[in-house]
Figure 1 (cartoon, helix red, strand yellow):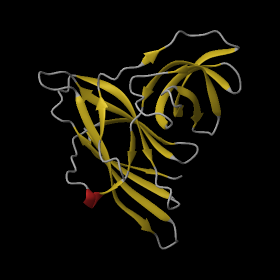
Figure 2 (cartoon, helix red, strand yellow):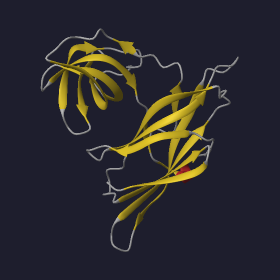
Figure 3 (tube, rainbow, N blue to C red):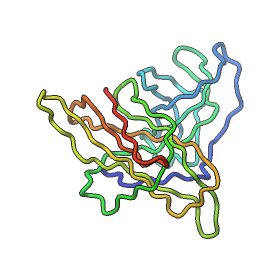
Figure 4 (tube, rainbow, N blue to C red):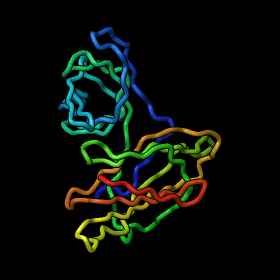
Length: 214
């Protein structure tokens, strides 16, 4: 409930590393939960299937601002063994929490592109691959905003639960010169067992509703 709006910075910085040559030196890309130590270094990560790896060497990025925490990230890495991996590059992935619709003062529905959507294997996240129209203009830093409105979590007659969400998007007057791909993870509520998730997205083709079955 604490996160109402998250900015997607079009000039997002990705910190890179030289590619190593380990036994399993084939670069992979995954959405991960990134473990941060007291020095604001990424020391390990957990895949959505529960597999956990230690990073060798540790990684850093400008957007890691809080110590002793976990960040959602997209990580490119070389797997060195069954439990270790070498970082190649990493980028921040905004994480949205559902906010009850009546708590939101504004509910913008500017169109946005959706390339993909899938539930994580651990059932913790609903991941979205978004296509944002962006560009640069005087007096505009290229920042857009997204949020997630929760219309209801309904108890059905068969005692199952259906969550009804709406993705909100504010273009913030950013010019729409080119397309930028961004990942967003929706942290699903853990206070109730969800049997069906309905998500409405404002796209350039109109409102699109997707249904997911955890």
